Length: 249
Ligand code: SAM
Image (cartoon, rainbow, N blue to C red; front, side, top):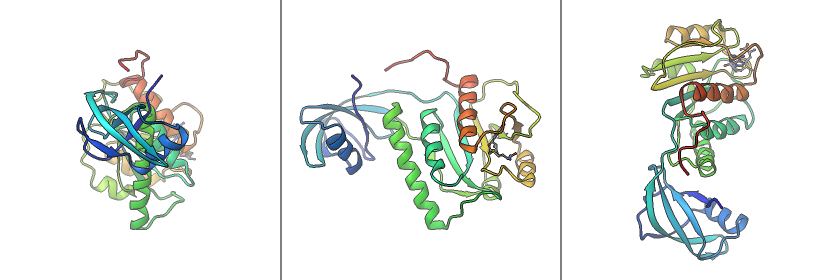
């Protein structure tokens, strides 16, 4: 049986005793009905898994002791950055969750000309914090021991004006000519997905001028959330680690 994994945003050392943070503690105590003596796996994003033992459960408070640790790498060989124009509703949560499962390295939530959502600076920070929690939870579920970076939302224009990326750049666009580019496996790849209404023509021009290659994903128009997942699956299966063989457990 697979052990429960819990993310804790703190340093971990063998021999430490501590209380689990509220969210994983509630899950462990209420949903899993764990008891003292049960085992679980902790990770804090440093790339290691830490064996842990539940010492006591009292209501939703769970005290644990930290055992041995080992490095476990389930990261993609390519550093994939998803530049995602934020769709409305809670679709961005879904995109963050699925992109994390699919091994994305970094997500930059973008506000573009046709974005329906608008944020103040404070809302942008709290949205980013929420999406970081979504990503941490996805890492608990999928076995990653490093969290993707989730940037604070910004406009596409501001992002392009300050972007230092030098690797491969793609913009997924239903009107692009190129159905499937040839190329060698990139070490890092950055790719942009538009909002519900797509990128405005001047945004496509700005992306092209910044070195983004247009790429079409088949003949159908995909929803923004579907497009993000389809693009990631395509990139990971072509250049990354979606090729079937299981490396470790
Ligand atoms: N009418 C919009 C347009 O033509 O761009 C549709 C936008 S689509 C709902 C949202 C985003 O998903 C697009 O901006 C693009 O980034 C991506 N997308 C959807 N279908 C695609 C396809 N077939 N090829 C490449 N990208 C696609």
